[in-house]
Each structure stands twice: as structure tokens, then as C-alpha cells.
Image (tube, rainbow, N blue to C red; front, top):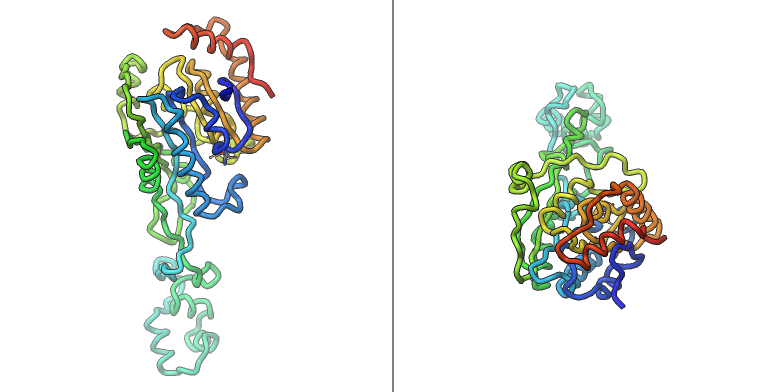
Length: 336
Ligand SMILES: C[S@@+](CC[C@H](N)C(=O)[O-])C[C@H]1O[C@@H](n2cnc3c(N)ncnc32)[C@H](O)[C@@H]1O
């Protein structure tokens, strides 16, 4: 018995993916845990996180239709403290409020080698913190002695997993989130940019892929279908789930990489965004989610979407069985 279509299933995707009918998924679109300490990934080591991704991607090969796609939304990670990156931060001269330079402190230190920083401060007429900043770089209270965070670029790892699974990198999109920071006072004492984009990596399972230009209007092709960069505002209200992606992102991926009546999978379902987008775009869906509260949330969101389907909404596709399934979405809301 295979996993039922048009349902959100509760469980670990590594256990449930093998229960999906082989060669049945036209598109799988998901965003996994990012290894940034969210509730649903707490306690997971980096190695375990890598295993989760590797195993999940490998489990896709048998269930994807030949010619089908796996699209993964993920961002690079910046939470690794790397022992080799001690004190990368330099002094920030633009913030100096005191005319005391590092050279002045060094000269005083040379003259009075036994002086501690309090005595040097008194000598130079500044605070001991200023002495410390000039001598040791940044603010002692800002983690000056801490090892620094290193950027983990995840694209290479994801590509490796895809290839090992027998899938081929096909394309990618850059999702540019809204510049929420643009008007804020946000700044960092580094040369790093604000975190305002993520990737969508698209893999292809070898097989015949029908390229149907009618999936999008002419305007949509030129606005986003053929474009590599997609500016889409991120989700503002994260009160019911802490890491939702926008419905518009899911809609675009679904409209480009699947046809009406196809089955779309999200095995990190979260609040149900992919399923809701699938319903709206006349696709079937399968959702998998490990946390019960999100299973309930996703089911609720699907029910709400179905309730809003216009009564006249067309459920006809070229495949009669798919048309029946689509009608079922309208008639029989998901359980739970
Ligand atoms: C980044 S969130 C996905 C959010 C989703 N795209 C949305 O818009 O709501 C990842 C989700 O995967 C779930 N998850 C984590 N590990 C899982 C696993 N092994 N199997 C299934 N779901 C898992 C988490 O509980 C979380 O809801």
C-alpha cells in the first residue's frame, strides 16, 4: 500500500519516502532544516544533518518520474565557529571616539612595560576599554576572543548528494528576499552582506521531459519563467511556523516544473506551503512532516485552500485518473 495522495503524512521522511509509489512524483520541492538551531533540528550534529540531506536526496531517485525534477530551497550557513579563524575582526577606526591611536598605546606600553591597561588608561586619559580595543582589536565584550563564524557554502554538498543519487543538476534560481534590512540600522562589524537571498537547486532524473511553453503566459516567461533571479518578499508572519517559504516561490517552482494533474511532493512540509500552492495550481500533493503540530497546521492550511477553491474551478486534465484525483481534493478535504 503506497502513501495516499492529497494527504499530509506524519513521520520522518526517511521512513516514509520509500512508501511512495515508484516513478510517480513529477516534482519534489522542499526546504530542509538549515542546521541553524531551529526547534526541529536541535541536537542534530552537522554530520547528522548532512546524512539527513544525503539520505533524503538518495530516496528520491526511485519515486521521481523519469524526466521529473527535485527542487531544493536552501541558504548558505554562517554558524560554524572555526578554531582556525581566531580574531578575524580588525579595529574599526570609524567608530573610535577617542583620539588615542594604537601607536600611542604601544609607545606608552614600551615606555612603561609593567603598566596594566588601567594604568595605561590613566596615563593616556582614556578608558581601559579604549586601551583594550586599540591593543586587541574589537570590543572585549563583543566576543573579541571568540573564534569567528565561517561560511559554509552548501551548493557543492547538495550537488554531490544529487549526483550520488543518480540525479543531474539541471538549473538553479536565486530567490532574493525583500530587503527587510534596507531601512534599518542593521550593520555588522565585518564586510559581509546581509542575508537576503537563498538558492533553489533543481535536479533532473534522466528521462523524457516535456517542455510545454503553454505552462506560463508570455508575460510570465519574460517576468520570471526565464529569469534566474526571483525577487519575492519573504514571509513576515512566522508565528505559526518559524521557517516558511513564500507561497509565490512554491507556485513558481510548481508551475515551471510540473503540469496540471501531476503529483508534487514536499517531504519537509512545515506549514503546508507547497501543498497549498499545488492545490491552487491544480496539482496533486503528498506532504511529509515530522512534527505533529506542523502536520495539523499543514492540514488546516490545505483545508482552508480547498474551501476557497471557486466552486466552478476546473478539474479537467488530459489524464482522466488525475482529473478524478483533483476533484477529490475539492470534495474530500484532507484528514486530521
Ligand atoms: C524549513 S522547514 C520547511 C517549511 C516549509 N517550506 C513551509 O513553508 O512551511 C523544515 C520542516 O521540516 C521538518 N522536518 C525536519 N526533519 C524532518 C524529517 N526528518 N522528516 C520530515 N520532516 C522533517 C521540520 O519540522 C520543519 O517543519
